[in-house]
Amino acid sequence: MGIHMYRDHTKVIKIGDKIIGGGNPILIQSMTNTRTEDVEATVAQILRLEKAGCEIIRCTVPTIEAAEAIGKIKKQIHIPLVADIHFDYKMAIAAMENGADKIRINPGNIGSREKVAAVVAVAKERNIPIRVGVNSGSLEKELVEKYHGVTAEGIVESALDKVGIIEDLGYDNMVISIKSSDVMMCVKAHEILAEKTNYPLHVGITESGTVQSGNIKSAIGLGIILNQGIGDTIRVSLTGDPVEEIKSAKLILRTLGLRKGGIEVVSCPTCGRTRIDLIGLANQVEAMVADIPLDIKVAVMGCAVNGPGEAKEADIGIAGGQGEGLLIKRGEIVKKVPEDQLLDTLREELLHWGE
Image 1 (tube, helix red, strand yellow):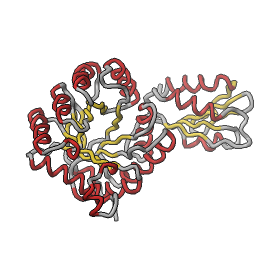
Image 2 (cartoon, helix red, strand yellow; image 1 turned 45 degrees about the vertical axis):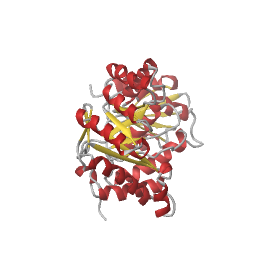
Image 3 (cartoon, helix red, strand yellow; image 1 turned 90 degrees about the vertical axis):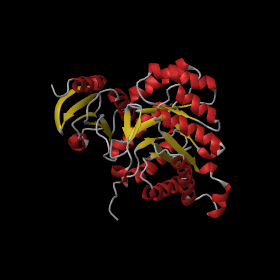
Image 4 (cartoon, helix red, strand yellow; image 1 turned 45 degrees about the horizontal axis):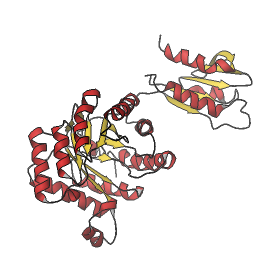
């Protein structure tokens, strides 16, 4: 079966000043882990996330105080803000009244149809998109029984059922997200859902874990889903600083060829020939290039044997020897420098790139 480009055919949805769906670029989201009521801490974290490349941010709104904070936070940030609501429909309304650009609800835990209708009425009046979120962890009992356990089919049925409730209320400004911490179940659910709906999909693997296991699970899950042309906006969920989520999301998109930009650092795995602290050097290079807006490949190599050859595919590279290092451009050695000047030499070259 050839790749369907589902994302070319999804409905276009506007979130603040950003758009997703209809083949527009896939946008990166994250979620704050500060107390939303603490405006100063939340704004500081969002500004760090913006700098890292976050394009949409979600904040939890568990209290009226948090809903009111949304208005204050919005004045100091530059990206659309999504209010995350659990259980209390009044919070969804208060968040929208305070300027949330989108709300995330699970109509299943908002309660009665009247409550859902009250939320939809405000969203409709302000044309605010609703993200319908369904998590395998909170699948309805009857669906668990129907499918003999938590299954991809059950998750999809649950999501489409919730979407149907909102459509029946006369509103279709929606984004769907279905999440499961079982990566392959999550993949299968997205494949089924993409065939059945043209609403844009927010894709993520939930509760994926610490930075290492979360990165691997997210890269595999998102990689398989996105490579089939499914998904309009993504989040990498990690237990840690949300800035790590953005770095990972950018790298996943770049690796799949879905996004250009940013310096890609390649480095050799090190071997017995390595005479420098290559691991430390590669990490330093990665940190150093994070804020340099070039779309090039930088190689960090451990020795003069394979260094120049392997660095051929990179635009620029450095290779370390004993006490000295080489600066390599497209496979050609351009200069030798003392080892302790290697990093600064590379940075100078990058800052004056293309001059």
